[in-house]
Image (cartoon, rainbow, N blue to C red; front, side, top):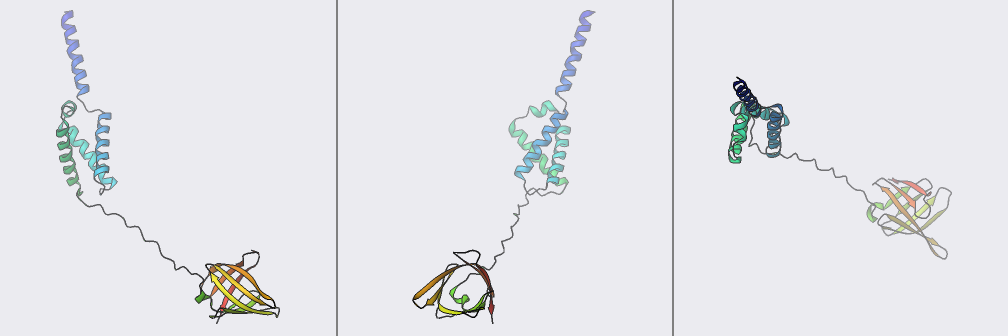
Length: 207
């Protein structure tokens, strides 16, 4: 009697163990879903995230319904590859997803090119007025200045990069004053003494 009971117990235990190992558990199902999703994300970039998730769920249902755990795990890599490919293709067809759709790269808008205004010998020529004076920069390289206090001066001028240099005629030689042009447009510019930054002027062009 004891032998029969022991045998029955062993058979029942073996059946329980077999049932446990041959059943798709939650962790197994999660693994199949995540592996399929990772494969779709890597190899089918044209699919949307929603399409990848839907196909992965379909793949999970197809695999677990068609194969038990032991049979599936016993298959070799070549078989698994063929099964995976065929199942993904079928699941994609079910939702109308095109696995062969080419990837369209989003074109980045080209940066808007802003016309850069630079002070040149040509566009500096003309009649200008700032807070303290009016001056003329002539094509010949000469300049004339009339200050609001009634004094005037003349001399020559040049532009080198963004530095405007005025050579004032003196009774004995000339005096040189350098100004850095901070901003320039066709109708206005801002310049600053290179020796005294407090001497900064905004100049408007007069017609």
